[in-house]
Length: 456
Ligand code: CAP
Ligand code: MG
Image (cartoon, rainbow, N blue to C red; front, top):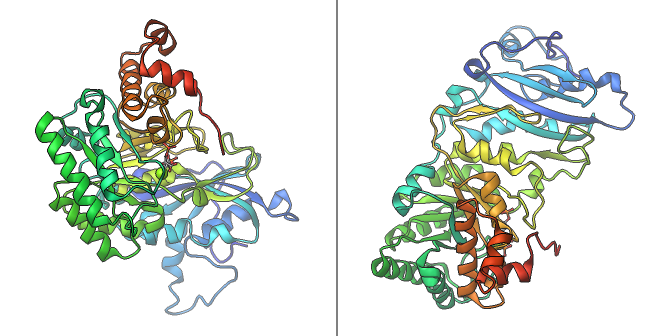
């Protein structure tokens, strides 16, 4: 119950100059069983109260109570839609500390997702005002900076995660890197650690980092073609992560990989701050515990069942905190997408992200764009859709889809390169296969088809 201050806007009210003075959130809720629909306004006002300056009961309002400022800084619920139970909350920007994402989220997504009044809650989007956008570092390299150090002007970058996920020794992983970097006339760019490969007894971080980067340096020298290794520094000890990042730099690496959800927002911002000059690849392992919504209405404001925040919100946060690439979902992956991947791509890459029926849009004031990573059950028969739908500033990752090619690893690499180049030329894959029946791509399509193989 929102009390003491008025947290509900009059009908039709909209914030003036939102991008100058307000942070806006967009929420979708379901009222708890037994709470009648006519309490929706109260629920919206309570969300505004509990996430800004209010609480459940009237409190002392006399001398030194802070009530005057609390009233001035109170958040306002507006744009209420009783049919879809969606609404927006406008927060005065002064209620947030600039450059502090953890503090900000403790407000806008802190307690309200635990209120008894609700049985489901989804933070659909956050629109950040100019001052807050500019208070965060953003990507150090981004799309343009990575294209520069890779020496690649156009087209997606292709890479592979060794599969099995873990099991290779550091030496064996370096040998795989050699194959990936030399097959298909060296037209393949990268190798990536899996999200759960850190420093294990049979594959120590230091050993792996040295061996794979030695292969990278050697092949770059021989071929003149730049390669990349998304080397996983993930650890719950920030000092160890920093040491690992500095070893990558010392070994001539250009990227570090971070499991950004399991390490957390503070870790991402701190690694960006003390970055020894590496691009940051963000893996989102465990994001499903934050953004999974199993309700039928996740795409169209229908009924929701869970407590979650959208992947659009996570993508915006990661762009602000300064990652250079982020897994964002893609068409035809083995993983579930709760928002259309195009919405993630637009939040990661455009200078003006447009609004949509479930998002608020965003002005990025020139902040660099982030590579969208398409990954998860992809293979040469399906990557074309990612390029067609999401554009060319993509890192396309295929682990099983490359290493599982029936003719072997080199053929897997070749098929991926053929599929990428064909999609860049807007060619028709089925027609191309008819004309090239003996190709690695034809074999891949014969083996996996043109759709994702949903195995789990
Ligand atoms: C893909 C992957 C990636 C997922 C992450 C895996 O392997 O290495 O971690 O794609 O999901 O472990 O499953 P395959 P998302 O290429 O062999 O499927 O990109 O959705 O965050
Ligand atoms: Mg993985």
